[in-house]
Amino acid sequence: MSDIFATNFTAADWIIVSVYLIGTVAVGAVVNRYVHSVSDFMVGGRASGTALNTATYIGTGLGLVTLMYASMEGFNNGFAYMALAVIAAIVSVFIGSTGFVIARLRELELTTIPEYFERRFSRATRVTAGIICALAGILNMGLFPKMGATFITYATGIAEHGESTEMLVNVITSLLIVFVLVYTVLGGMVSVIVTDYIQFVVLAIGMGIGLVIFLTHPQIGWQQTMDTWSSAKGEAAFNPFHKDSYGGVWVVWQVCVFLTAMIAWAPEATRALTARDVRTAKRTFLWATPNAFVRLAIPAFWGIAAVTFFASEPTLSEYFFPDGVDGSATHAMQAMPLLIGKIIPTGLIGVLVAGLLAAFMSTHDSYFLCWSSVIVRDVVNPLRGADLSERGQIMLTRFVIVGIGAFLMVWGVWYDTPDSVWNYMAVTGTIYLSGAGVTLIGGVYWTRASSTGAIAALVGGLVAISSLFIDKIRALCETYVDGIAQYVTTANLALGNFVFCAIVFVVFSLLFPDPSKTARELRDAPITTP
Amino acid sequence: MTRPEGWILFWTVMCTVCFGAFYLTALALVPLGLRDLLQLVRTLRRDDDNR
Image 1 (tube, chains in turn brown, orange):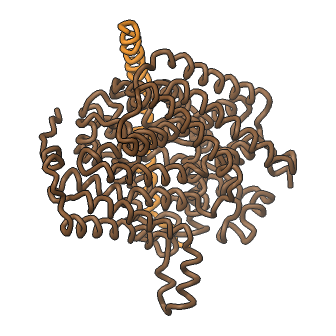
Image 2 (spheres, each protein chain N blue to C red):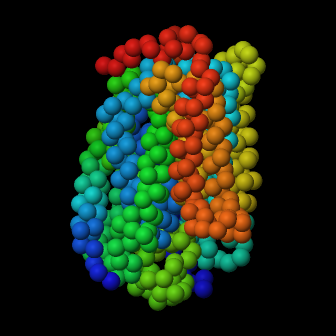
Image 3 (cartoon, chains in turn cyan, blue):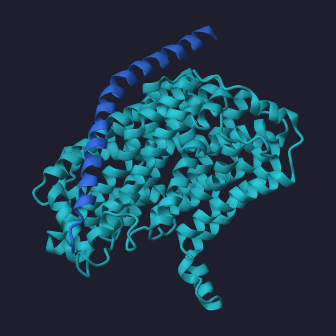
């Protein structure tokens, strides 16, 4: 069995990876001396130009966990999963060309997204949003280390060495978290911007190398991949609306997730805040459109290509497709890393793994900074009734970052991974996005939106937690209510949650209007978009 | 199974166009991003000197 886990990764590749990681941490440490204010630490002094802002936005979005879940979905569902990439690109064009919501956020010179809720609604709305945002975000991040660990295990061939593998991988993952903690804590957003830029360059090269090698490999290639999937799954492998694929409800849910994520999900939306001005914020989203497609489509293709390659290797085929290629696949999480380890030659694989570990780190640093900023500025400060000093805020943010890191080491390393990582990610995101997305859009564009409506919608988002226990809910329905169970799906519940939050927001806003004139004045202030 | 030619063409075109656009964008972003980065460092260094 261990032979099937053998890869081309050698000691030379480990040296390449080590040099890269140490160099990155050193850069983070060097830029620390330029950080003096909260603005420097959290939004890089709001001095990032379009190209740099776009590069770092891409670096943040291209996490290793993105590559892992997208490749798993590609491995299981084929090209149909790329529908998600198309949705992401369309939403990115829409926001970049119209400035939908983000123009307003940048104009207000905010440091965090929940800060908007106090400016537009009330302090209680900001604290509610901050708590739910941080809860959803940290839970969402919970599987990142596990994904990183799995990637390292199978791409580097550690899995070949037997039963101590899991412990070794956990140690390596913990070390990676410590690396990211060090340079995020030392440098804040300035170090994140600098290292994200470097990681964008390495990633673009690494992903390009991987793509070219797969497309020219005699056992993979584009045409062979199309043939394998056509004969194995038929139209369901290409059409996301097909009854044997995701279905229309799932597609609509994903549109809601991506639209709200780009305006409200802190690590993504923070790019609007770090931009030099409103025009730069809009351009960032527009320029990042191809990336919105590519960051999901390339790893999805790697998963798709893994099926083509494994199908042509009897031992691997038996391991991954015990019922044949047209049956259900197993071990989806191991597929992409193993394919990379087996196909990419020694030396090049070191560069590619360094790039993908860079992806792991660049997402972690942005997420650490975002969730810690939210906890300090949107929960602690408002509850204290007065802001901490600049130095105090930076210190507390650093402590919170270390606390989140400690949580990840426990939760991420030891928590059992669910069957669909993407659904876990989308559901944990929906907990915050369903309420916050509606509230942000309503706050910017609807005169009668009120604080009570906003808090009701944000709290309503917590209903999405039920989607994490879909199997238990379905079993209860089968026992007590005839004919309902077939409609109890993750997509139906999660999309229903967006609709529920919108209804709650409108109803509560109309029933409990906001008397604050200041909020209306703030909302009605003109947006000076160039 | 029937080969879904329409869908195959759709994904072939989408991937070709978007992968190509990504690498064209990357070619522009690498030098321009470096310029912005150096400008950011200069700005922060100037602020540092003024303290």
